[in-house]
Image (cartoon, rainbow, N blue to C red; front, side, top):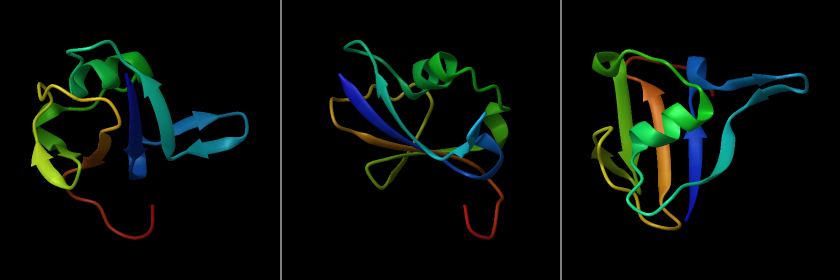
Length: 81
């Protein structure tokens, strides 16, 4: 299944071309937000992370569905990004 992942502030991926804020991730059925983080190589303290799925607050073990939009962001951030 395909998940659209929005990465905010310090969670953005660093590449040779700059920072990546939006990523499409292929995930097997039953995959979770935690699985997305693992697949992308993102390590961040769970206690300082906000997980939002389709505009609703969720948790890392939330089971994702095809075409979900997942936002991963530090619990405290500001500015554009």
